[in-house]
Image (tube, rainbow over the protein chains, first blue to last red):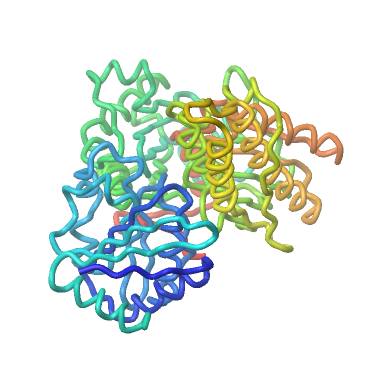
Length: 153
Length: 348
């Protein structure tokens, strides 16, 4: 199940993320892909706003994961610098899944650790705008795509 | 210098395992570095049969006791000579931090030495005050403004005394070191990207105009837009030229690095003036960038402000800075116990 949403500004991208945040629950995984500068961190900033978590969302590339506390914690991780996706297991992926939402940037570099049911978001640059390609892998993620479709229409 | 009569010795063992590297060090009186061992250092790496702790916390487990023993040996001291143990307890990766903190607690229980947790950023600030054989640390002139720039951080800190600081600016998206690293990747330069970009930039000129984002009156940084601007510029250049034409990599590297350096220097100097700083300090891996060092020094000269930076081996993650920061906490009467917790991120 797929859905493409076009946004014209970083703020519009964050607004889509805020909508998604409304229906997330512990164990949900958002797998983000897209070129450098596509806006992956920007989307996660919107997610954090929607979840009402603490702390400022900045790129986790070098620190690998930044945790944000809140009613539903957000674990913002990044596979860009990893040699193997299994390194995410060493630094606590399973614990994050048990308690909060995981947003993983550069998820294509860590396919082996993604849960079977995850929401994939591929961000494509289109001049000033962006195309957000969502695809739901598994029943839970498909309901998330449906929710986004209802918001977008 | 803070009072130290409460400590039985001024030698403090520091332990650091907040991210990629495992490190231990012995520092005297928060200043004189007696030993500083980092597991990924070439000589140390060989000692441990090629086990390099990278991201995985289990690798920290494999080397931590050996790194600590090596730090004691190189300092020519034993547990009995020490006055306390300092350990980084955040921010960083929980699993990695736990390895250092658990080891420190075990040593604390086994030896009865006082234990204190140290903030990783506070420790970076202290690297400026460490004396090494090749370089003396900064004088105790406060207030000081310190730029901590690395792959994971771009923080501007105001120091009013040892261990007394506030973060007055930070990155809103990418850290400075991350921006440099990603630009190197976009330009097809090697890893680690920062040094590769610096090298390529030496052959180039500031030919392309790239943004130097300013965020109003704030001392915050934003490098994400600059990164996106470079992506676009590369696409344009590729579009203009016939297929297979080579990119002007050196000029692009130079222009990008210059934009990052200008932004760092501008905010740092604005803060130094606004807060009446008596010196400007630099810390973190990006402090190794020679263009940043030169331009910050030149800007300092124009304002009549001394600009100081630690030796290269204290810029990147190390435990000497942790021992130094721990000394000031311990001698100020601060202590932790086996309840010491780790934390992942600062809640700003």
